Image (cartoon, rainbow, N blue to C red; front, side):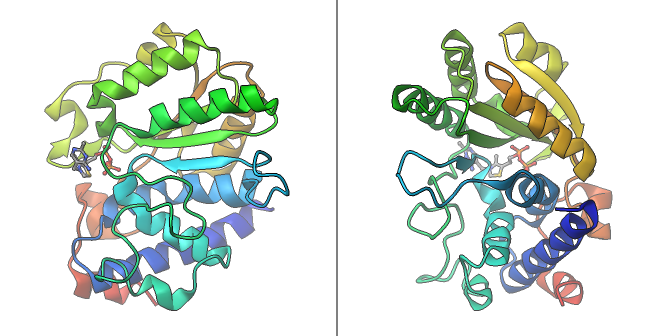
Length: 261
Ligand SMILES: Cc1ncc(C[n+]2csc(CCOP(=O)(O)OP(=O)(O)O)c2C)c(N)n1
């Protein structure tokens, strides 16, 4: 797919996110807008194998930073797996969940409690080795930079290098913010690249809002014979002036509404 087409898809995805934010002020708009281009590059640029004839012939996407689920729902609507009207039910008692739930069509793994996705991904990547599909099928785990404060991430990361899990691709949405402020103010991270490479991961740095950069990073990660991490540098709230300027998470529904149509 051409870069221009990916850009149009991303623009439709962002409008859908803002439609959801206009319905419910607890929607994590900032995190969803920062991860949008990463998801679009993955699903529409690289392509996620979702419809294998055998249950083992498929890829997996784990949105470990599950609070950004509006971006995933918006992508699933683009793929036709969710109906547009369903997006309006987000966080309703009998509507779409506020965090990924595997019972929703197209959602592979339930997440929301930060820090768990990479462990699940490592397990699935190991199962791919047992199934004989390692290196042919992939598991993509998308994490937040604040999420890296969770110790469980590093247990999974060191297991992945010990096992040299070749089907495991981690993508960190490095937007520089977590819930209460800038990530480095809450707990300084030092060099993320040095941290991941010191435990044996192949590190690729990318501009998380450039499709050219993301596609080349994803290709490199898929061809590396071991676990690879993409540090995708993004801006929280990308595309929505007020949020992008402040790195904020939530937005006034009335403000979001203006940009959602
Ligand atoms: C275990 C756990 N603790 C706290 C939270 C609450 N929480 C929701 S979003 C968030 C901030 C996450 O920041 P980051 O990982 O940087 O993602 P971003 O929102 O910047 O995309 C937190 C702490 C959670 N979901 N899970």
